[in-house]
Length: 365
Image (cartoon, helix red, strand yellow):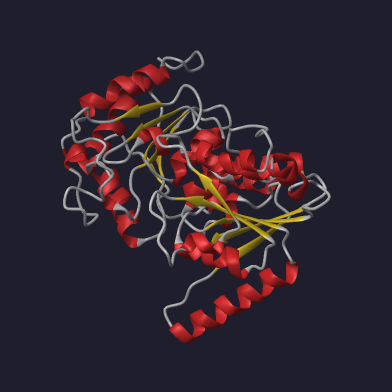
């Protein structure tokens, strides 16, 4: 059986590969080790990705990805259907030999099947129904319970009979992106040699966010203790921009407010330059881990064993209550508020900041 599988997944039989990850920014970041492993074991194959609109920047300029298909949605059902049919036609035209569905949902399974790939790998869940997305795959991979999402993804590579080359997520920026970041810093009176902290405090999932007042206190503590500024970043939505604007108004240390003003590539370049990253469980947190910027992650109801920052030296701050992590979308399960974050004080976060800053280069007190 193993010999048969090796033949099926040999370099001779796998010349075109599709990797599907239809979720959010951080999900795409932590999928990048899969592309690296595929490139290593199938060096002559054409490797494509199918991702949701708004996340594709996490794979652009990646030498392990030859082509990126983007799933675009529309509120108009007729326009939306037209877009989906057009995308399916483009996928089928490639004639993929292999598809890896990393999303683990019905939409990803459907696109895997409709892509026309000869072999289609998906995750096996405990409950398999008679009419179920599992029927859309040729191979089912049982994910090990309690593993980090990076390890979960790489079980696909192990199913193919290969050993992952690396487990570390990776991101790529161009010289133009780096130059754009330099201009941003210069416009805020920061040079290449200056230290600064990047703070990402909010995203659309508000139940993951800490309190505005505590963020303001943290910015002031960093400036008063270490003498370096905090640069605040956020997505472009009005709610997120308003959130960081309020932090800036409450803080006495005048943090630099770039909320909603950065492209994703500029964000990657900025975080890679930072002395320290502080943020919630989000895409920017995974970006910081991928570019190896030391970080402090503030977690609420999420499970850091599965979704924490990948790599050594990062610190997760989370309440040690019996109900944490509950993995719910807030205490009301409606995405509004998490008591474990509401009750988290700045005094509980400061020791993690001190510990990380103590590892930094000389000159930071």
